[in-house]
Length: 76
Image (cartoon, rainbow, N blue to C red):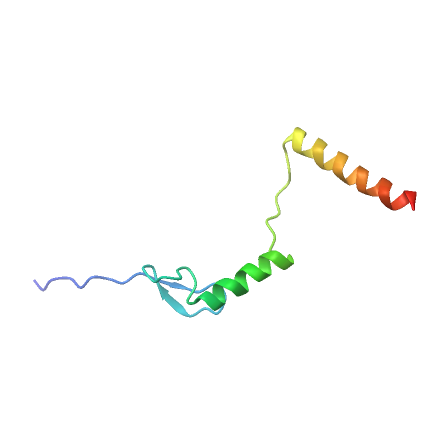
C-alpha cells in the first residue's frame, strides 16, 4: 500500500476569492491589500452584524443615547 500524501487545506480569500493556504501569513486573506480592503468595508458600514439586541439594560442605554441626540437636533 502506497503512503498517503499530506493534504493541503485551502481556503478562498473573502475579498478576491484567490486560493489561500491555512498556514499563509495573511490567512484568511491572500494579501495585506485584501485584508485592508475588508477592514475598509467594515469601517464604512458595508458589512454589518445584525442581530436583535435582547439585553434590557443595553436597550435602555441605547434609548437614552438616541433620545439625547434627538433633543440636540430639536433645540436648534
